[in-house]
Length: 223
Length: 223
DNA sequence: CGGTAAGTTGAGCCGATTCAACTTACGTGG
DNA sequence: CCACGTAAGTTGAATCGGCTCAACTTACCG
Image (cartoon, rainbow over all chains, first blue to last red):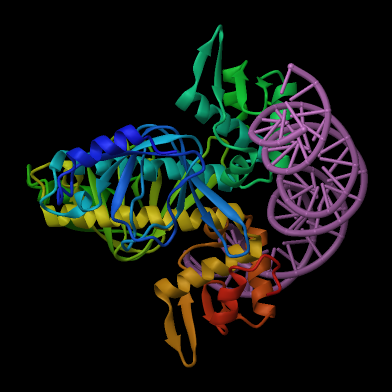
């Protein structure tokens, strides 16, 4: 759940009406940070853990917009409202920033420039995601996804690189515009090709990063 | 490539070191404003006309990221570079702004806030587009697309609303993650359902906006 | 009026989905 | 610590939506 020590500490230190001051809090696994339609009072920078941003349709379909890792900023408003749900996939520490830091003239220029950079980065990342959703085959999607995670959270393991999938198949599928079955099949395919190994459902060992990267941009899933 | 006449003109008129001044120029139909990989020195606000932002894969596949209409801002940098191509689909007038207005402390605060708003709006629009690409069927995609154009550039025609498609089937297909044939078939379907009428390939008359909107969020293309 | 590009339509195919059975992983309580 | 129950993930078979390829029609421009 919440880390009491940090919250308690903050309470003592927090001065009222210090709108642009950063505050740290933690979010238990599965907890929501905000929901679509909530009005935006603060935006957040992830310090550790993983968040999932998603949008839900009335009929139950879901699109996972992005996963946010340490350093990523989430919660940018549009018309003053949140346009996604935001949930923690892992215990997560976040730093919150008054939304007025974005546009109000009095805000810290350094912070504001930093937030603008984060927004620009997000736009660029989303453009990549468009190519993924619009152009790529199931195999390319899954391979691309693994490559991007590899870059974000890969750690060396002998001559290979490993990482944990912090999200369920479910989330991967809704992120890539596929079904869980298809994601599973593609992971199996990559495993049988000898490009990855799976130790449990979450732990991925990348055996051939170059080939994997090649598959991520190769129309026919053969290379 | 670049339009020589316009560039020549700019060279004469440009005063050095007037970084934040807005400049207006026009772009002929089919002309490019910038290319993926170009370094970003200025960003642009559309005054009239239509721009297409797209990204090209090595193997020829293309994703149209967005269409920009009057009021939209394009050209946001990431790592100082453009990450899309940008081309005019119609004769277009654009106002250009020095990119330093985004982040430099000395920049006009009003302008900067405005640009931040534009960036936030873009993020929100892209989230909608994700849902489109990731969740929706061909029929929903085309219907959604028509609805959004209707809102952007619809004009009354008796009891109906009409608009011109400023882009080719080609562009629509690459925007929606479909083929031109599928786009064509869906337009035909909507026509046969009596929701729209087509006068030539570009001119659309929306006969039943409510039904069209309903189809835009209905899994089975029946309603 | 002819030529070319753009758009439409049709037939057959293929990749991803659906639906269902099965396997594995995991947390709980005996 | 094992046994069980549930949730998550995998695999298979059959279906279907959108794609490919090809022919045809329409619009546009010199």
